[in-house]
Image 1 (cartoon, rainbow, N blue to C red):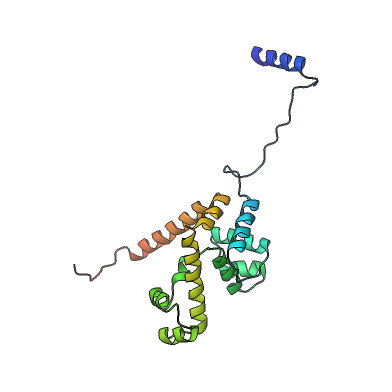
Image 2 (cartoon, rainbow, N blue to C red; image 1 turned 90 degrees about the horizontal axis):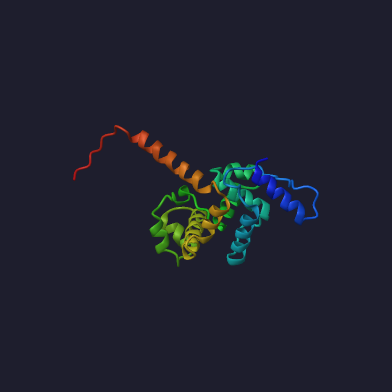
Length: 195
């Protein structure tokens, strides 16, 4: 011990009734960012349930699995196998929580046409767009989730990314990989576009 440390030790011993000045120092194991917070994820899910009607009846643990799986880049099929539910149940739960994938918007028709037909029945819309009623219900649910999310400025999505420290990183890496893959696939291609 250096001289200052020894002096501080003696002062502490004089003013306290303790016989020792050693305190245990336990460090939690985990990532450098401190890990994610399961309680925060559960709180966001609960707020969503209080605000919006959920289409699925998955319990809180299963919903947390869907949230984590979404940010880990896992597919609905992977999650449905893990949770022993249908893929549609996982997709519905994901949309209930405003977790929308780019491929959710890959409709066989222009989504603006579907928006324009929002007052029409499912059957009328299916006839107009020449698709099945289930396809119309699916994409109406995607549009509804987008609308709900926008109305609250993506507040719940942001809360999930705050609770899962690596969420934004894994999402940007997935996006970068997709963009790089597209760049590689189109590299050297010629285009017949006249300006």
